[in-house]
Amino acid sequence: MGMNSELELFTRYLQIEKHASSHTIENYQKDIKQLLHFMTEHGLERYSAVTYTFVRQYLTYLHKQGYAKKSIARKLSSLRTLYEFLLREKYVEENAFALAASPKTGSHLPDFLYEEELKPLFTSIDTSTPLGQRNLALLEILYATGIRVTECVTLSVRDLDPALATLYVQGKGRKERYVPVGGFAVEAVLNYMNESRPRLLDKAKNETEALFLNYRGGPLTDRGVRLILKKLVDDAALSSRMSPHVIRHTFATHLLNEGADLRAVQELLGHSHLSSTQIYTHVTKEHLKNVYTSAHPRA
Image (cartoon, rainbow, N blue to C red; front, side, top):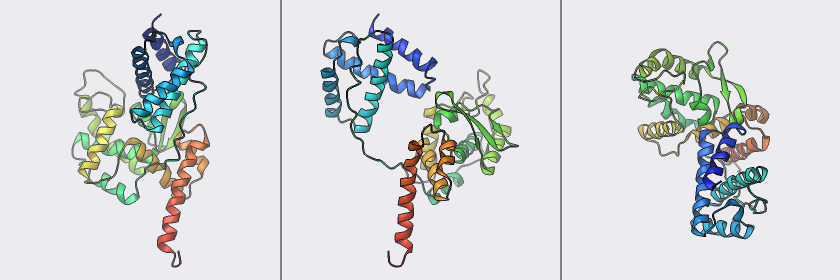
């Protein structure tokens, strides 16, 4: 069996056993194909031919190519997982990546938007068009719930309960959770569903229950959401860095700034571990420090 065949088996493992999203699988495949290219250049034709020395050589190559420590750490994690699978299936006799230490990435505080930066995004949207109504509903949902972009694009028209103001979300590893939705978001989504979504759906070749649709009436993709947010920033004449994850960071930071419990924010974000949520406490501490410095007469 060739290396590409084993990669296909690993991809099915990610889909079926790990319930990985298409975005996650795409990143795994990119990381692995980059390794395969490097292996081919060095005359290695089997996964089992990779040694710890070769792994060190590959990491040095990535460093020289200018990859950030965080990117190298992610690639290393992908390859460790691949080799754990290959070891389990007896395609290799050892995990050559298991002993390789990940580069220390340091603590990078997440980007987020202040409330005054966020308001122009909402007010600049022209809701007289179907796409404008969709964009407002999309932005409201992302900010009201803090859901991941992959969770957002898999939402169904049945997932919002307007009466209870809750949203059913299927997260990483198909973990399910219900999150509360604010009144602004509920209103925006209902307006979109009642008025604009049917008009977009008329353009579709196939029926779909996806909540958010593109201009052709098909389900919106991760990339589509990112492009929409970029356009909203441009239309609002903002210089802020924008992505679905920035809105997720903003959601968490605003909640904690207003005194929300860390455990509650963990549940809302769908984090398995509290440590994933604790990074936002560093952001809020920095916020408090700035407030103190600007407000205290003897700061």
